[in-house]
Length: 620
Image (cartoon, rainbow, N blue to C red; front, side, top):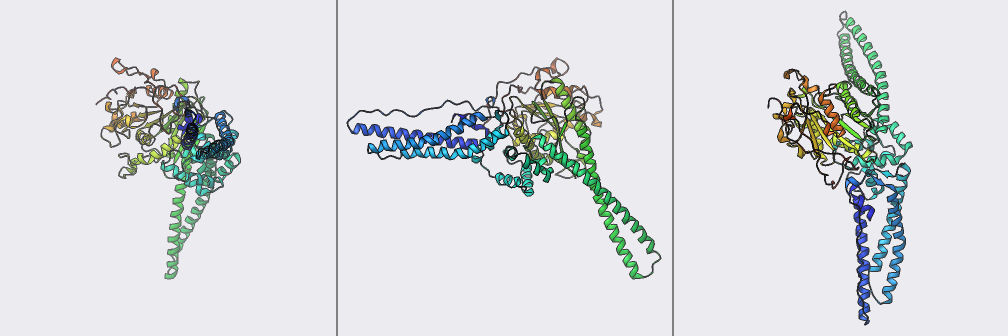
């Protein structure tokens, strides 16, 4: 019971098992207490004296607080299973002995049966728990397993499963591609915050052989599953990238040759049309010509779509090439969807092992075919800066284009316009599911900080996503050049630390006063502290300042790095005494009651500063 009381907050099946265990313990105590009272009463009936002893006992438990739990102690769980097995052996014997004692005193009581039933229940749990624990011990080379492993591995048999994830993962393990797709579709809804944890445990328990078979069969689907190890996702997506590039190149060559042949045939038909006077022959030529024109048009459309995918592949390759430079780690490809606007996720460093993880979410007009430029560069220089300030820490800087960002070309479309929030609302579940996966896949260590940074309209998406996972989405949010935070105030976001940076000459940031995208983060009534961003010197009407938050050696980039590292006392201050204020960490925050975030799943000593009055931007 002590093990469960200390660790039940990890979720999944653990709370249900803990509740069942507590109920059995209470029933057991009640059975012994009732038997003792009946025996004492019988003794008094026979003329003797007897006092009923109190057999109710309490147990001292460790507080189930996030600051004292960094995962599941595999050894302690082994002791739990051993204790249950001993109870399963000893309690039925105790029940039989109690029955004999009560019978000798001519006492009819259900107490003996209740004691025996508790032993039978304990023995029933042992088989499943021991089997699950054996798998965990085989797949964990350290003494601590993740909270997902506790929630859905060891106690998975008790975990509620309203969405049928267990059936889908079982089918997917057998190579059912439709089941894999159903898991990806469920993930996209963002409705199940436990899904990534379930997938993390399922994948680990599959073993290398089955994992490799699924990767070979459906690399793009496997690479899209949040909760899987980043290295495995990268392996699957890189294989998909190479396969798509080869297949598209071959298909383009075929289509272009076919198009050239059709155009030549069309040219010949046009030459035959003029000298022909036979109406039937003219009709045949017209029909062939129309068919050729239609086929050429279809091929042109197919070529255009494939050329777009090739440009998208080139952009991803450009982003990947930024890794391994200037001391940077290799870039991991965590998602890839080709066609349309496209989607991808690039990570500079392994987020499963990082101490500080930053997720950059871009805004309006972002497309995959341009992602290899400024967007991947922003994630790269963010890694550079955070690593420079804390070279002894492992950094992961992620560029997340996992949603369809609004486009200026869709200004008049309610779903695609940057003037309203539907695009952010649709992207929010995707981002929430992604951060679920970061937390589920991370190795259990003592200190992890997860920061999600939204630029421009990306900040609206971040704000919407945070509200889907209150107190579990991230440890910190950063909004830069934000036209709206997706909520009226910072305290509506459910994240303890929210920071805002806005250049004085960034006109997009000032749109927050009029755009229906949530409260304007640069306003003092939003309730978030601001960090210093210098005026870029550009004319406001050019919008150039909106893209300069990551400029080399800029105060804004330095401050972003300090915030990601939790170095609040080292922020570049606002010029002048009126703009400079000290940041004081608040007292420890009470532990969450469910679904802890990455930092809440692991003990951490990291300040989360009190919001300070935001200085008014220029022109307010």
